[in-house]
Amino acid sequence: MEKLIKGTEVSKILYEELREYLKGKDKLPKIIDISIGNDFGGQMYANMKKKKVEAETGFPFESRHYDDISYEELIKEIDIINKDEDIYGVMIQLPLPGELKSREREILDHISPNKDVDGLTDINANKLFNNYDCLGSCTALGVMELLRQYNISVTSKNVVILGRSNLVGKPISMLMKNNGAIVIVCHSKTE
Image (cartoon, rainbow, N blue to C red; front, side, top):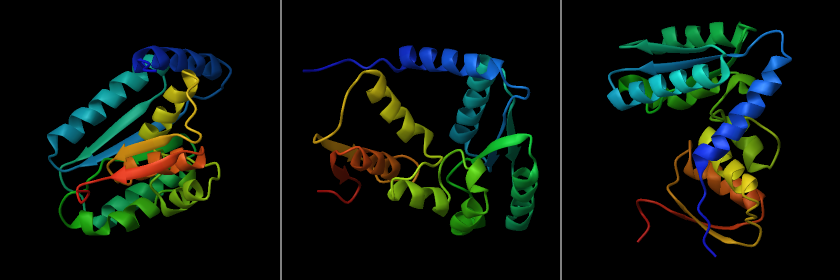
């Protein structure tokens, strides 16, 4: 039986729940999104996230764009964010450009796991792998929430995941496995 899943309807419900939850809070969470380089698509995506989050929730979403930044400067920036109690989360747009790309793992693991909105630190990835509560990929969690909202169980179901990225494919496959699905991952090397 086929069922049309409407993400926009579910997002309206979730944003309303979030707005209700935030009414009782003294302080609104602040999110930082860092983008580096001249990836036009990444910048457009960051601007879209900022506009949507601020419009729907009212809490501050700060996009910080750097045409160029050294590894050392980026680590200092992350240190400041990690220590700032007013900042609840940080995202770094991937892929990183130039020489930063070769140090991507070090950069991501420098983010405090408690502020790792995308669930990309080794600590959060390990927690996901071991089925512990953690911050995780927004896309992967969004897929699971859509299924939950429509009362669709993946237990004992065959699920095919297209892609194996750390941001989407791997987290979705782990969440599906953690919820009892039989998972097949297809990617660029799959015949």
